[in-house]
Image (cartoon, rainbow, N blue to C red; front, side, top):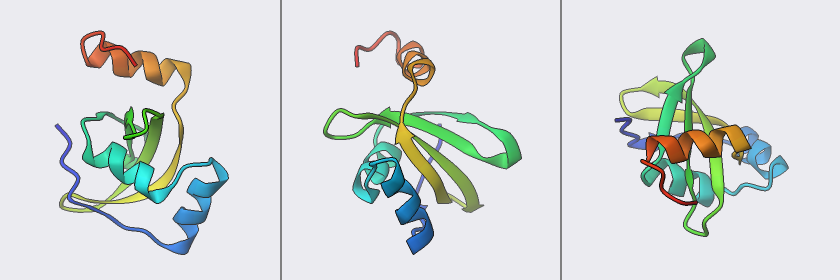
Length: 94
């Protein structure tokens, strides 16, 4: 299980999230909630989960240190990502 203690924010990644209509608060909710995760290229981690408002989001994280990550981007989850989340959570409805 992925443990995320800290997310590092700067004007660049905050602006990038805004391009996808995702707020910092939503990305934090997903990462600190009960997401599923998988490893991606260049050591990055993909985190998929619902925001408190029920939006299914995908957050891409770059590890910075022990339990600390830099959110590269966040966006609404694709159909394939939503299906993966459902499968990992035992068929939980979205």
